[in-house]
Length: 395
Image (cartoon, rainbow, N blue to C red; front, side, top):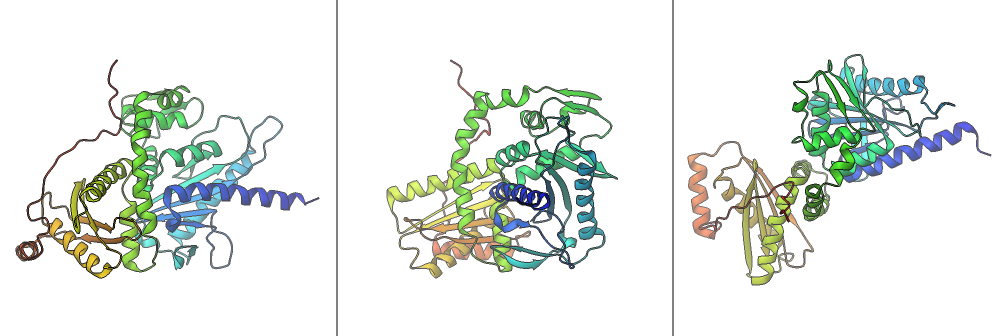
């Protein structure tokens, strides 16, 4: 028979693996670092997610419950202290931390690049005890997830932008308010989603009670169901991101982050634009097909070419020129992201351009490129609207 220590070690490893698998769906493998180590070889935390200027520190425990079905407070507090210790090592002491994952290999953590830090404690035990969804360690807020809620929130807010926005807005709730969330945190999440992804509705209330019917009511709402249906196409953009993960250079790092930055709704809009471009290209089959679409602060360029895989260098150059020209076209977004492929979708090329200023010289060069290549010389302009939660026609 295995020793009890070995048994709980295996339970802990299973718990960490479950959360890591869930997290890689939301954050992608590139930014998930399981079990990062300190210089002395000791584990810093169970999972570290680093995306752009945000770090999420996870500590996961598969806890036993006592005879009354409650967690032992000492074990809960130990998990919180481990999170606080990891934060201190990383950002106060700034000790060297080596990170490693299957795609990016090994690299040193750079604390000075981080502006936002989230701490998450996941309790994987089988307690039925109502538990606070946040805890405080000195002045630091720690999000406390059950296994069920971790699964739910990482599935529902399954982009890094959506997930971190929820954490940040939860952290911004006035700590002096008395809030009771009946049932699990999924009901708090439902109230967040139903109120334009925010908690400003709490501003004029000191005592707040959130019913345990919020989440069931949300997921049975026809508009929510319609949203889920419309979001299906957005996972096409996730596939585009996944195909880009083939390098570790600085240029790749920037490109991968820009591809992964859009939230789920933005990915839906981008994916529809790319799908429409691909459909029109397949119908007409011109040698070269170009389209650009502006959404938010980014312009997206799509290039489709016959035999593009064999003409990779030509395709890359054309995509770069397209992104340059698009930077100078309304709405003159400072960020331009380009994607190129061919009919069979066997290969992809990418281009990211960030240019804060647009000079008279840039404008003159843009006009020269357009005259020489015809790129977006007389673009066909269309406007379309998209609601995150589609209206349901009355019957």
